[in-house]
Each structure stands twice: as structure tokens, then as C-alpha cells.
Length: 268
Image (cartoon, rainbow, N blue to C red; front, side, top):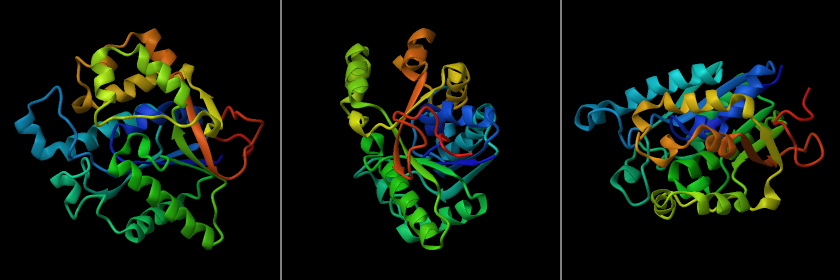
């Protein structure tokens, strides 16, 4: 069967935005490969002592990712080996070890090696806005496209490249129903405008996997604020919000009439 390869920025990104499609691909016999650019060293810390955990957060989050990947059915997980870049204009963002500061050609070269080895039919990453403007998400977009350009020049193009998407109309409606705490967060560093509806090509029904998807996110213990609206959301509301995953086809041809219902539509 064909391979799905996903390029994410930090541990936990995979569960939130693509966990359902990953489990569905695995259930249908596809190979699932997860590439994570950083170990999330700059993330917030919950459920553990900040002073003790901070120096080792990269290692902690690597273990959490391993646990989540097992739930999601990942066959192979690799790190690109860069440091979490943090947000714009922070010292972490200027760290020469950060993903943000990495030379595009170098990072794309590392990713191209993995793509050559796996020969995926489908690749998934973020659109140019990085969902909410995080420098590592934007860099993942640039690096993935640069790596795929290299493979195309070598005569090894992938059949499809998708960007994760949140339809703008759905995002606007969802924000209006959020608690005030969540709306304030969305207006701060995590400003999510959503993908223009006309660019959304693919809607993947993942209701059968939504409980495991939530369990995979909970495996990222250090990232789960037990008091957050996300953690306390009722199961039926969570299923409504996360039971369908949306994607934008960026390279390749649709495998069915739009909207497609599967990332592997048209791929045997």
C-alpha cells in the first residue's frame, strides 16, 4: 500500500491537526511516517515541575511523542534535529540552533533524504501562514516544498501534497462559541484566521478515531493544561469540533469530485 508522510513542527502538532487522517490511513493498510522538525524545547510546561522539567523538556516531549505515535499507528518517526524556535522576536527565535535560523537548503536536504527513502504517495504539512504564524510551522511549509522541488527535479515527484486546513467560516463560527478565555488566547499569539473556504479541497471523516485522537493528544502530558478549555471540552463538543479534518490540496490532482473524502482518493 501507499505511504503517508507528515511534516510537523513540534511534538503534539500531529495529534491535534492530523491524528484522525493518520489513524484512518493506518487502518486502511497504508504506511504512516511522521517527521517532526524540533523536540519542542520552548513549549509551555504543565503537570510537572517547571524548574525540574525545563532543562530536559526536549527529552520529555520526545518520549511523549513516542507514546502518541503508538496510539496513532505511526510506522516510523524521525526528527529533523533542530531546536524549537519559539515565537517571533524572542531569544529562542534567534538561536542559531533553531529551526527558524536553519538554512533552507540544509533542512530541505535532510527532509529529502527521508522522502527518497520512503517514497510517499501523499505528503502533509502546513500552508504558508503556518496555521497561526508560528515560525516553525512556516519553516516546515518552506522546507517541505523545497524538499519536494528537489525530488521533482530528480524525477521523483509525490502524487499529492496537502496543507492542513481549518475552513475560515467554521473557524469564525467556532470562535464565537468558545469561552472568553479561549477567545482571548486566539486573539494573542495563537491567532488563527482559517483557510479561505474555496481553498479547502478535502474533508476527512475521522469520527471513528476521534476518541483515540484525543487520547494521543493527552499523551503529550507536558502540553496539557488541565484547566484549559481544550482539556475540559465535553466529548460530544470535541467530536463535533475535531471529528472532521480538512485539507488543502497543494500539489497533484484531486482523486475525486471535490470535496475529496480521503487523502488517498485516486491513489491505488
